[in-house]
Image 1 (tube, one colour):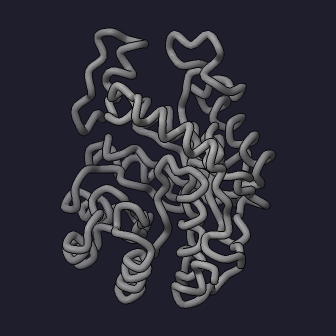
Image 2 (cartoon, rainbow, N blue to C red):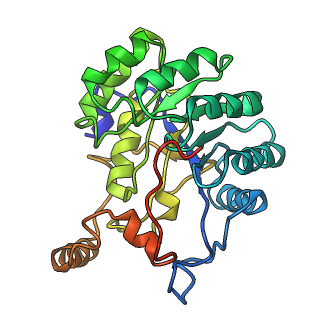
Image 3 (cartoon, helix red, strand yellow):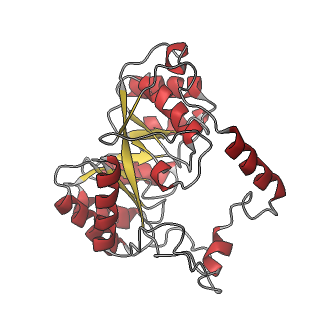
Length: 299
């Protein structure tokens, strides 16, 4: 049986996904090969729009999320405005990963209220999110940072801090827990979507199956998948018009490339820690030896 049947049955045949947009250099520091792809730099509104156009052309995405908190808010406001002009009517999201103060968040909300689907984690912590939500003039706030466990739900929902909760089947304890989380969101009138980590095809397939069973999934799910250059499947999962068709084949409906899985496993076992341990500071110091992780809020 397909996994979605084991979870109670699907309520949709396609799961929509949102393109993930990143500020980036043309190549990783010290990488003469161009960073492993041909996407080029995206350091200004024109670069972000070009990146979005490529993802739309390649995968049909009609929803776009910009990972912000990189440049001063004015620059990221300009990028979102440029996206709104290039893709009129498309759902847009901005996620600065808690990089702003409450007042800065409110200024951004005022500037982008008419074009954003939601603003994700503009500030750090539930109390600050609640303050922004109360004063943001109706712009919904989403999170995958201040609500990451079931005990954190009560404060966030009863204070009105969150209007869209981004679930993650890895962090929330699996597929059935994800369904339970979605049911709680429905009870409180909170929207639900799904957060993306750097998933390979097995994870994306699991995400698609559980998303197919969640009623009221009104926001496209996030996905990093188009950025991944490796996989462990015999055939990569395809997006058609920005969505993945829910497979009815047994299990997750995908097949493992056992040779590739073994090669990645051996690479993992041989790793000196550089892949296992996330260290953003070390990565950034390859470009700037004096770089230090910024304190929050940055702006």
